[in-house]
Image: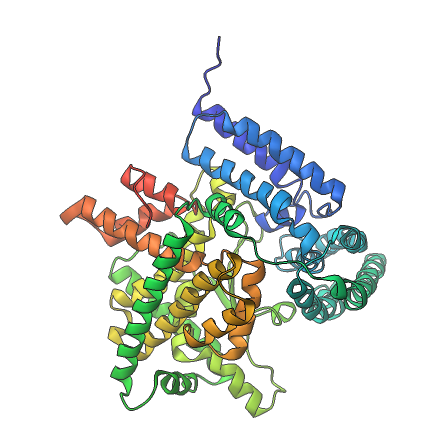
Length: 547
């Protein structure tokens, strides 16, 4: 007699996947999520470790494939298949040297970044984790086979920052610890990591770089599978590309029209250069963000944009010293299972006090009025921070952990446009121009990612596209194109935004006169952050196209 599988028993299987695979095989992810039983452990980067991961994933894939279809089943099964695609086909563990050096740096960072335990306890865990790091770099030398040259070049570029992080930032984060033995143990482990990183850097320069002749391109088939498993998007790539070009042209047209409203005698690029000069002084930057957040929450409440589940705002602060090399601004929210360090921090990097005036001015150009607004919307209200607040009310363990970038980044990018569409800034053309420049950057990522990885565009042509079609500086264009070689599906910002806009239109048509923007956004938030296809089924009750 066949066993009738219930929804509850299926959910138990998904929870077991988290408990038996997701955290034990990924201690760094566990720490970040707020599960601290693995804080003294590190991922097994060896070839044998990869084989163990593959075997465990295939076991779960077989089990989940036999379970009744459901949104959570689709979410978990696609996540498993995405991991298998990465390990067996993309094989970043054989092709990307930065996975090792930046991987261990992140493993240290997640212990430092939040005070979930006393400094002494966290330092003890960090020391245990650091003792395992030299072996990781040894495994890298055994595993890496003919990486793409750009991957090795990027890894080498990253090395001074990684080494400096362990030399300066890690000790600084635990300077309050006075236990002599604990400090001595940490210094020994930390010095060993620094030495191993320096040796790894020299090995890459003198050995690996010369034999790095691999191809970074995924090819159409693997690219399509990656998109299907990670974002649950199965639209043919030529159709997907046409959608991206349509959005690019629409945004370019609106950009030109908006620039003409500001000053028809100047080119859009001249107007952008003028906008970069419109920024607060460095010592007033936090105040500028604080004032912006207050205006955003008031507008959201008065115009019924989305329910904000908690009146507690994120703590606005200067970026901690050990994070300043990594980001201009960031939202640091606790993991879904964190029970102690539950504060959320909105970090903003300020210019250093000893910088010359010219460097300060150049730095502050990234914090002009438009950038401050779009950053505050994207990171906080109603972007990532509001979505994080809603995640606290999601019951499903897998929904708390597994999701899609096209949802999380798509929502935050959608919010940048939506807030202005709803009347925030009263139609200020300079604010709209800033939003459109960000949209063009994301459009360029969308197109360059697909075209580079399917052989339609070279690396140098990718740079050219970001400059000419995305209206970006050469420096930004180079950085963004490099990112696209190893983050091929970074189309998810625009892809997610377009899917959400279509879902909103279809939901409005279904509801008719009963449509409420706030209700739509609230119902969207209740789903967690799964692929939009799952959200669409929940809100519309059908499997109609997402785009």
